[in-house]
Amino acid sequence: MRTLDMGWDTCAASLECAGSARQPYGRCLAHLDATELDEVVRGLSPGSAIDLRATVVGQDLLERILSATRGRLGRARFDWATFPESVRFCDIVFGGDVSFDHARFQRLASFFNARFARNVSFREVRFDRELSLHGVAITGHAAFDRVSIDGDALFGGALFDRTASFEQADFHGFVTFDGTGFTGDATLRGCRFRRTVSFRKTSFGGLAGFDGARFSAGGYLAPISVGRHLTLAGAWAGKGLDVTTGGCSVDLRRLEVGGRLTVRLDNARADLEGATLRGPATVRGRDGARVTSLHEVDAEQLELSDLDLSTCLFTGMRHPEGLRLSGCALAVVPRRPWPRLRWWPLRRASDHG
Image (tube, rainbow, N blue to C red; front, top):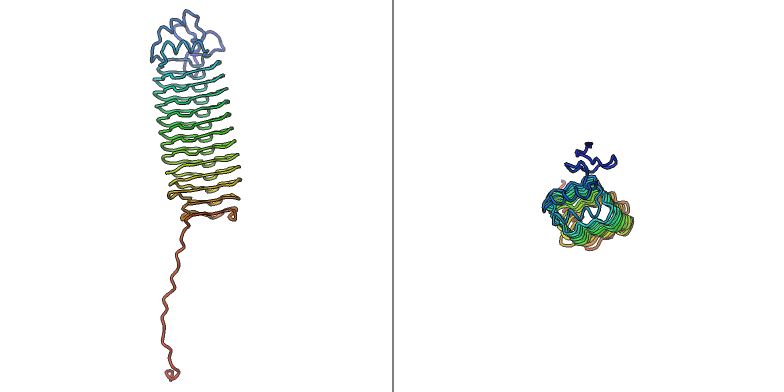
């Protein structure tokens, strides 16, 4: 029996299969005969641990496992697994840690309304078609780093109770996080959104990090609720970006936007230092919203309205003639008082003797 460096005994059915071997058979579940598989399935119950690492998981095999566990899995390992058919984990409860790292879904993958009681990882997973995590609830940490999704990705109405990481994820289709709730920090650093992405009515309890993200077809972060800090530092939006938020700091340093930029701030502060804005750009404020820096901003059309600019740095702007202000509060330059003058009485010529 072979043992991979990844740490599991591999299937003895063929040299090409690296599936996790089930003892005492020495083969993965996909290569068990009907009698052997029946024995394994009979031993399953709600909360049972499942090991399908590097296994080709067909629809029949998955349905038998979910049926035997009554839709309640314990620790579940699907690392490097291949799903050649449509997969539906709808309403499934994952009671233990779950890992799909490096797995491949060749058809639809739906986790609609699934519940993850602990941590879940989808690192470097490849989805050839659509992915739905609409309405899922994840109690533990969630990792989607370097995931690749060729079809649409639906995260609407999902709830992430702890941290969520999507670093360098590549989304080829339409993406929606509408109504999604992130209780902890959410990191989307370096994400690539090749089509339209929407974060309407998304809430971020802590950090919302889009550093270096790329919005090829436009991004809608309007309106979103951010508890502490929203960063789009170094991000790029080819066809426009719409941001509406409040009560937090907003980092727009080195942001590049090819189309229209619209930013609405409610009791928030924004830093646009070094931003490059090729299309019309508007930043509007209310309830004490302020902009702290326009240092080295390159924008031919930039309109600021109803903002506190009393501490804003304007130095090095590339096109200051394109700046338009409306209802903004500027720093007041203190007037220097005239020095007190002392008047001396005129002396008559006779006084000089």
